[in-house]
Image (cartoon, rainbow, N blue to C red; front, side, top):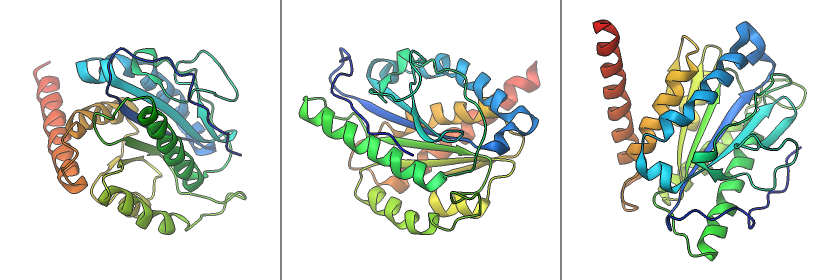
Length: 253
């Protein structure tokens, strides 16, 4: 069951413009396999350092964390200060320090994405009312190791209805959507939801995935006139370049 978001009390950052980042993370029972949830928690715990390397993101970024699995679909306090219902789903990235996540339950991926998109739209509207324009289009990142299911845990095809809606939002320059899968994720689902912006990481390396996210955030800081396809192409190029640099550095060690 989803929660009703509230945003107006969010502390105002000094920078006028904002960059909205929304993580949508799979915490279903499959994430308990081989302690994937533990690896994800470890990666999230160190990710803030990576994020803050970008001065623009550090000064203007706001982040929300939505999970789907244990507890259903939930907005988790990204700052780690509170549990339960979250009144402020978005916090400055400088405060990103979530509590450790737990694995369990089914995989309500589609419901989670709908919820994340609504959180994002509501926050965007609140920022507009308060005179804080967006630096770039809102960014939504999904990380999963499975396939979407219904409430009974049976595979669901509802993602096929969601995909055209995402394309419409992209074409209208309302958001950018990226999908990351690890072992167990369905390639067809990833490619259907994010045809030009999906990655599959076979070795369950969540730190690598979050590094890819950081790299793509940089690429997405483009003019509002750029098409989603052009931004995705640039993000792919930068992610590939970053990966090659990391491989070279590792080979020198």
